[in-house]
Length: 270
Image: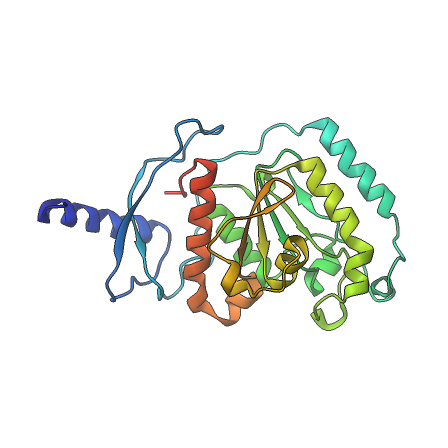
C-alpha cells in the first residue's frame, strides 16, 4: 500500500508528465494511478524516461491538440524497405486511374496512403476529405493535424507509421462511403495491410472499424479493447473529425493510444 510520501511523489510526476503533453487541465474528479512500463523484449528502444503514473479519468479539456511548439520526436523513420515499397507501388499501379465506382466522377486525386512500408503501427480512416482530395495525401486537413499531433505525442514521426483509408477517393460532401464504394476499394487496402504487416492497426471511427472487423457494434462499445484482423491486433478509436466536435472524447482516445504503446512495449513522448 502506498504511503503518503509515495502518493505525493506520484502526483507530482503525473502533473509534470501531462503538462509536457500539453494537457490544459487535469480533471478534479477522483482518479486511479496505474503503472505504464515498457515490455522487456520490445523491438524498439523505449521512449525517454519511464512514466511513473498515469491518470485514468474522463474529462480533461484538450489532451491531444497540436502544441504551439513542435514536439521533440524521438522515433525516427529508418531507411525504406525497398521490397515492400515496390510491392506497395505495384498496388498503386493496379489501382491506376480507377473508375471502379462512382466516386471517380468527382475526385481530383486518388489518395492511396503514405508512410513507412515496414511500420509497426497503421492508422485506417474511412475516406479522404476535401483537403486530402486536393493534395492526394491522407489526413492533411484539420482532422489530419489532430491525428498527426496524436502520432507525435505517442513518440512517432508521421512518416514512421502508415496511414490509409477504406476508400481512396473522396465521397461527395464528406459523406460516409457507401457499400458498393467500399466493396470496390477494400481489396486494395487489404493488400496494403498484407504488405506492411503492422503489429497493430488503429481504426479511426465507426466506418473503418465496422468494415475491418466485420461488426455492427458501436465504436463506443469497441474502443478501449484490442480486437483482431487476420492475426493483427486492432484498436478502434474515435475519428479525429469527431474529436474536433467532441473534445471531451480526446481523453478516451489518448487512453486508447496508451494501450497501443503498452502493447508495442513503448512509452509516450516525454
